[in-house]
Amino acid sequence: MSIPGDIATASSLWIDCVARTLCAQFDRVRQTRRILLSEDSSGSFSLSVARTVGKATDLADARIHLGDGAVREVLPEAWSAAMKGAVVDILLLPSRFVFRPLDLPGRAVEFLEGIVRAQVDRLTPWAADDAVFRWTKPQAKSDDHVELTVIATARKSVMSLAQPFIEMGATAVEVSTIAAGNERVMVLRHSADGGNGAVRVRRGLIAVLGSTGVLALLSVGLGGIVTESYDAAQQLIQRRITQIRVTARGNQVSGNSALELLARRKQTMPSAVMMLEELSALLPDHTHATELRLEGTKLQISGMTADAASLIQLLEQSPRVAGAGFFAPTTRAAGEPGERFHIEAKLKPQAGSGT
Image (cartoon, rainbow, N blue to C red; front, side, top):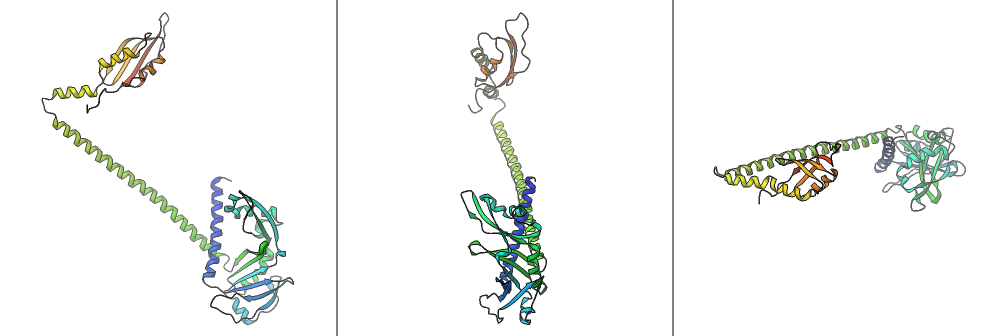
């Protein structure tokens, strides 16, 4: 599976887990009546109403037997009425379940749903769709590993215990058991609406996450537009400042300022005399320049040398030369003592405009 597919699967499983948790919390906040069924060694169930703070119940505890997808006894009318709108909490004996230890890397804790689902058919006699399963809280085994226990049983057998109470009017049935260390683990939550409550919460979570993503993209896009607008405004202001400075400097030069113009040209344009002096010091004895051309800041040199490639490095050692390179092929003719070279370079002004 591709990395985007793995991310999408992990995100979907995370959203499902959050949706189930929120639905369970909503039931508790609404103070939905909870009816407790605890299985004993004889296979019968004790029936009681969970006590809530500030509320008492007048229903006496009872015992019932479940089998073949039905309650074998006729419940008293008061208990039948109490079932409507309640959450039924069934605690089954551990003997109904398969317990399998699992050792995982510590970083795998974030993806337990997908990891356990992928290994259910290896750890238990059932495929993932034919089983209900959960796991105990991961316990640190070493610096980079954790261990937990996977608890599973056949979905069909558990649903046969839960469905009768849904038919009596219960809003949901939760099935759990006791693991090692007296830890209670819920393996199934079956809702009367077929999980539509969790589906609605899941859709809401997806809508919130999607809206957040869209808003983030919009904020990034708007931020880019605003930044470009500010950059354009800043460039416009800088151009105007430059124009004002040029105008101010032009106003300071009178019509009879030829001397100042010459001085400015001397300061900003490379000097041919100084360049000739520089070249005479840089070029080795085996090099003879036959042609030198200076156009503005562009210098072209042609001539004969014993090593044309070394001239580029020698020229770039000068602080007045930049970007030296060959503008024509270097050739060697029969009978000639060296190579004919054609080098072009850009010259830097020897002084700034403020000197």
